[in-house]
Image 1 (cartoon, rainbow, N blue to C red):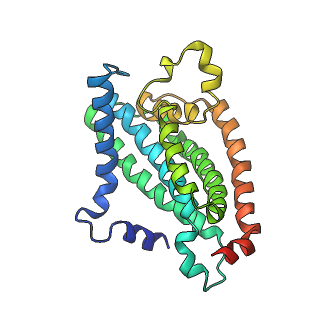
Image 2 (cartoon, rainbow, N blue to C red):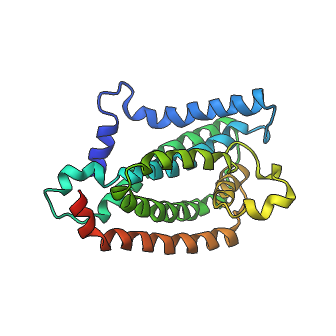
Image 3 (cartoon, rainbow, N blue to C red):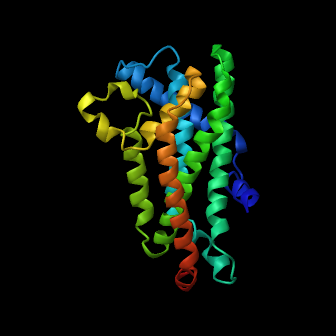
Length: 242
């Protein structure tokens, strides 16, 4: 299913899977122009890497979430003639977008080597940050997948919400720009923890904030379990609608 999904996304495209590399890089250059030229703002000499790390991490999340309300309905013709379990469809979406993330991550490592940024042994903690994000994605997408079967407008609403959410997160700007009085509320955004964690490991070579990551991981793990149970337990209702 993963292989078929990947092929369908690049069917008859001239560059094929190379878009996995070009798309986040082009988006990063746009944000780089926006921040450094138009807004006269920069987070240091590695501004491109600063933005690129956020872009590939966010795309993994946003693409998974934006597609999730139509995740089950897109397979409606298949599901209506079978009695397949529904949870594998949730996993397939997550894995496909994880592959996109890993492709983007290869671009990050290439630029890190090009710019001479030092990679430390703290790189071994990168999979833990990814695990936090995976649990977050599964929790959100499974809930939206079930809701999207019954609420068709959810696809458009989700896209609008994720677009706004990116600018409320430290994607193209540093969290140091947030006023002290707003810090508490700003930290309620999980991306105020996840994005700095990626940058700490990849760009700064430092340890991420494990305490905050562990708290969010616990929350996301519970959310993922609940979301998957919702899909599984509503299988009969979902099949009737499909």
